[in-house]
Length: 329
Image 1 (cartoon, helix red, strand yellow):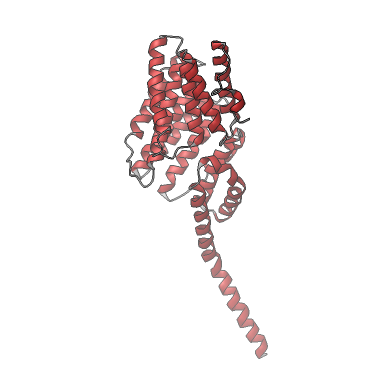
Image 2: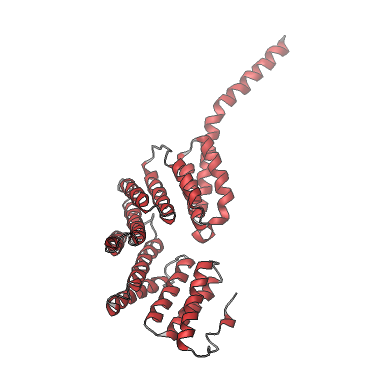
C-alpha cells in the first residue's frame, strides 16, 4: 500500500510539472525562434534563398505556438524568396494567410506593412495593377502607425517607391499615369533623405541603397522617354544614374551586389544612347564580371544585349580589353 501511494505521489508530481511546462517551454521556444530569425535577418538578401527550408520549419513552429513575431517575420522572408523565384501566386497565398494574424505588439506594424508592400509587388507582376495600388495604400496606413521614426520613414518611402513601379505598369493602360511615376519616386526620396545616418534601426547602407535605387529608377524612366525631348531627358537620366553609381561604388556602403550590377548595366544603356559606345561596352563588361559573383540571368542577358548593340553600331573588331572571350560564361 505504501508503495502504491508513493507511486501515486510521483505521478501527481510529474503531472504537475507537465501542466506548468507548456508555458515555460513555449516562452523558451519563442526565444529560440526569435534568435534564429534575428540571425537570418542579419544575412544579406543575396543569400536569403538558402534559408527557405529553415524558415518553413520556423514558421511551422511559430504557427503551433501562435507566435505572431515568428509567423510574420518567417512569412515576410519567404515572400521575398518566392519573389526571387517568380512564385507570385505562392506569394499572394502566403500574404493572405499572414494578413489574418492578429498581434498586440505595435513594433510588428513595420513587418505587416512590408508584407502588404511585397504582396502588392506580386500583384503587379501578375498584372493586377489596380489591386496592387489598393494594397499599397493599405500598407501605407499601417506604416504611418510605426512608432520608430526611422522605420516609419523608411517603410513609407519604400511604399511610395513601389507605387511608382505600379504606375509604370499602368502607363501602358493610359498615358495619364506617366506623370505619377517620377512624382512618387520624389515623394519616396523626400522621406528617405530624412533618415538619420546614425540610426540603429535603418543603417546608412540601407538608407543610401534605397536612395540610389530611386535615382536609378528615375534615370531609367528618363531614358525610356529619350525619344521625346531627347536631349533634356538624356541629361536628366545621366544626372540620376551617375548619382546612383556614386553610391554603389562607395565602399562606405554595404549595398546588394545585384543592385551594383543593375546600375552598371543602366549606365551602359545611357552611354549607348549617347552613342559613346566604348564607354557603354566598358560598363557592360564590368556588369558581367560582377555578375559572376551573383548569378542572375536577367542581368547577364541585358549586359550581352548592350554589348551586341554597341558592337553592331561600331562595326569594328573588339579590342583585347573588351573581348567577350575574357568574360566568365
